[in-house]
Each structure stands twice: as structure tokens, then as C-alpha cells.
Image (cartoon, rainbow, N blue to C red):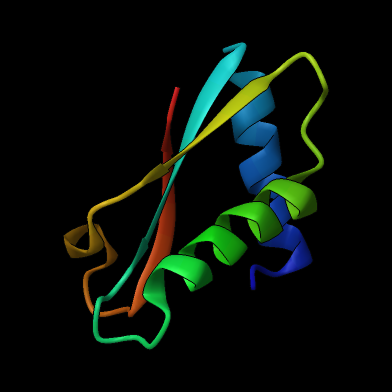
Length: 79
């Protein structure tokens, strides 16, 4: 989970970008049991926690776990 400060900064960055469509990519290492379900949970959790304005469309996609560097999971975005 992200800290309140990290959530605030991430939300601010996404809202301030002015984009009306954002793609959230979730990646979980295949070595993690039930990695697909955990990836879905992670994406829905961050989406809920960010509380983005309703005029921003969010798309969820499976990401590349190599983007996670040393972590077993991560979330990144493009807009």
C-alpha cells in the first residue's frame, strides 16, 4: 500500500496532467501464487484509493513485471 502522502502526490500528478484517459498497468511476478487474481486486486485497490474524478476514464491492463525491478509487484501508468 502507498502512504497517504504518496497517494496524494500520485493523484495530484494524474489529475494535474489534464488527461481524460489513464491506463493503469499492474504487474505481479508469476512466482507469486494466484498472481493474476492478486494483480486484479492491486489494480482495483489503487483505483479505489486514488479517488480520481469521475471525468477521468481509467483502463486496466496487465503490465510487464520487469518494470517492477526488485519488487514482486508494481503498478505504473500512462496517460
